[in-house]
Length: 559
Image (cartoon, rainbow, N blue to C red; front, top):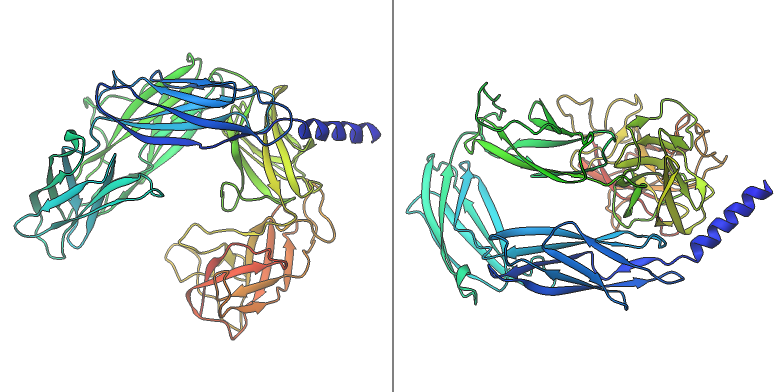
């Protein structure tokens, strides 16, 4: 035991003596550059908020960026864009220091070569609907619409301001009043006032009014970052219908000229969701691209998804800066609590995709393990890009350091901010509703919804069970990784009927607030719904643990 204490103390001392990297900015741009010209050199400042001395190196993932670092830790970014065709480009500068906490970090650089003002636009709009596009410019732009003689119309907003992104932008919206006959309506927008002659033009526009489906994809592109020999990874693109009718994906006929996916990429379709799986196999490190077209029955026919696979040079695990997030809201920069379930994002974190199959949780899974201030953390999911773990209960409030180990290799150190309790009510994923169940532990307290066991809670009758993370240590105390006892948190209040700020909410003392028995890291708050609470389909609820420690708010339905 004495040896363990000595090792942990030595580990903490080493962390305390390490430099800690901070960048003045994590993004630069957009920078507008005339075609055929190199862009102006940009700079970013790196500082050390820890001890010791930074020893920085920089690299870029694209050939048109040349990054260097000065003796004063000023990062200089030269833009060799003269050979680039017109269009937007994004590159990443990686700032590294193997001895620093919170390194490496990335600087995203965005440039626009040539005019960002499009030559033409096509809007697909249902009767009674609208569609918009927005583009940024180097300076304020005057834009004038020439509307169709009848039917739909265009509206334009041009704005600028130092705190906006982009600083100057123009938004064009096409609107079709209800009852507009289907058809194609030509119109245009004339732009002027720019010091760049290329921005002053007539944009040819066609508004396609249709009663057919209109397809939209989210996200619009995918990027995989995987090491050769590691596990494959899957990401999904959801297709939604912004128009009328029913959207469906049209199977590609045999012999179709549409290029087949490359050998490293496979796709599968379930309903209107397309899943893409990238497998680096034994590929040589470097970037690989593919444009995958998904054909639908929509008026705008198809969507093309640009997909990039960055095959990484094999190395130790890399945890992303600010990449340790609570598993409820996933908000960057939020503090974390002892006993809290968190997701750690990064690269080469594990050789496989593995899920813990039983309790208690171990402090390693597959090839991966994690420490917080040198203490092993229980882990229940491992993949190359994400680990899910529990912050050890013995982690003291304040700054803490997280490290990943894989196959005997120790990764970089990233910092987190720990507080004794950081309550987070779990969202349901439908509007602002929470995971709040009636006493049958099956029915959600939301408006009656087809396909989901649901009904509003009855005031004065029902007890609603809210599930949460991050409520901290309990009495009796929980043990890392072990199935939870029925441990309760200190007395707390649930506020029904207001969204955090003081108002007309009703304070309710929970019948139980603590760990869900038999689980790890999951809490529940059992709340009898009084007869005098506000009614409605979206009544806000939050947890007040005292001392200004408040949860997020979620909605429930009360009748």
